[in-house]
Length: 291
Ligand SMILES: NC(=O)c1ccc[n+]([C@@H]2O[C@H](COP(=O)([O-])OP(=O)(O)OC[C@H]3O[C@@H](n4cnc5c(N)ncnc54)[C@H](O)[C@@H]3O)[C@@H](O)[C@H]2O)c1
Image 1 (cartoon, helix red, strand yellow):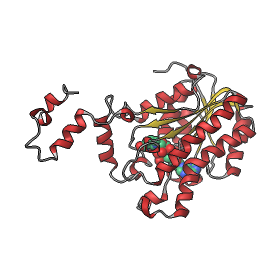
Image 2 (image 1 turned 30 degrees about the vertical axis):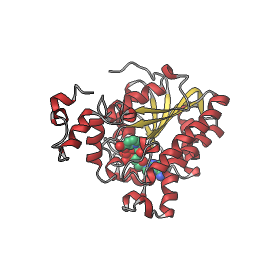
Image 3 (image 1 turned 120 degrees about the horizontal axis):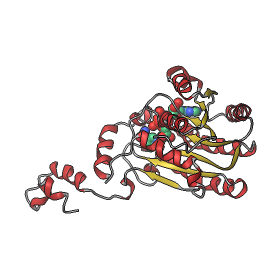
Image 4 (image 1 turned 180 degrees about the vertical axis):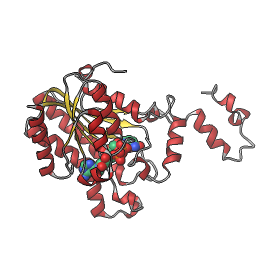
């Protein structure tokens, strides 16, 4: 349901590849809420992705940019300002890629050239976007910049690999730049730490289905979908969250505050030879009442 929360607002959305992408869902919701958009992705992603369809649906223009290239970002932001006739209101950074993950290199056998690429694409690109937007004075007062993160920045998750380091850097950039951007221009900068979500990037992590099942069982509200993530991001672009900045905001159904849940314990116990366990351990009905 649309509430016109972004009526009159304008922004750039990085990272819509196909209709599973978190950025795709955010673009659809932002458009429903009245925003005008510029969509961007790498030239190669444009060939393989479906961004033209999203642009037609949201009446947006597309400006290609590799988010690791300062020249491309400068061109993107300058052209966006021309298109909108001046400053704009928000940016979504929804970008990640690890060739170490893709090539199956474990964390104790990383290729360092690939690690540098992971950090550049998935985290330094966020700094580049912020720095260039700041230098071009592209974002209006009370504007909002959001980047997508994951709980692997704080906790170790099997197989998340060098993406964990990239997310830790991304969240740190949001704090460090958020201070300067807030102090000097009243622009807020936050990261949203989303549940595992079935997208092209998400599915690159081996064992992703098992991870999604685990987090679903661990989260009291269940995993957050890409559509629900879009709803949340819209609030961060809106004027309802003007004093929220420098935060990593968990949007994960409660997962990040959990240690063990009854539903996860039940699955775990099923795999144990639990002859000596109290009865409730093996009883699905009982376990939910034993907190
Ligand atoms: N899917 C999940 O489980 C999950 C969970 C938490 C956070 N996230 C984060 O959400 C964000 C979006 O990922 P997604 O899950 O929607 O997957 P996705 O594959 O749909 O999106 C990733 C995007 O990054 C873009 N990209 C890669 N290299 C780029 C570059 N050099 N310049 C510009 N764009 C580039 C890709 O083209 C793609 O559009 C990522 O930051 C990801 O880490 C995803």
